[in-house]
Length: 286
Image (cartoon, rainbow, N blue to C red):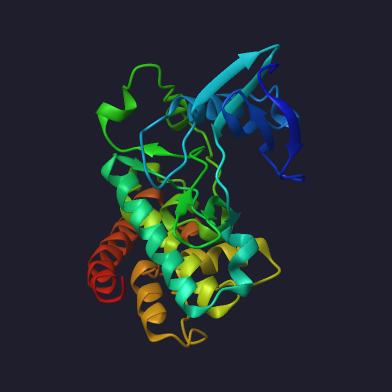
């Protein structure tokens, strides 16, 4: 990595990768390296390399500019963006700023979906905002899911991460849609990303996460099976948008007690509810 100098760690404590601010021949860049703890994990290596190879030309998502492999290390290089992430800024935003962020994320998702790619890891830390709020950018396509054969077969693109048999795929716990939490990747669609946007909208306008609980299994069941309670959201538009984007089927019993076929039947119903409700809500409030 001799072509980059003055590396500064930006995300100490991250689980899967470390990012650094560096200086290159053409100015500042962000360097992303697979965390050393995963350096011998074949699945995480595939996932990391895959992100570095997925390079659609997008205005509202910052993608890899280069993938560097040397000295048994791999680095993803992406352009530097002057701004802060939504996780850092959320508590201090005005109502107007919150809506600008929500509209910006929606626009970025539309562009990504038009490029036939799902994000599948949408969360506040993966949303960057310029100081004047004129630009809202998505980052981190580590879990990105190509929705068409054209994207999956793009030259040089490593698609193996989502095709490993028996693999339990990772997700961002509080923001994942039910179909992702139940590992039904054949049901992923644009409504999966918009579900995550709905959870972000809830957090922005309610000031807290929609579910809480000490026992992981109970919390997981609530998140998969119980509608989001929007009563704590005072803004009417945000309330309606959250209800629409996070609509879900209520299973007759905890999903872990159902067969895979029964799970998928309920998930498909929930996705269709989301699609129909979201179309109307988005027209009204975005």
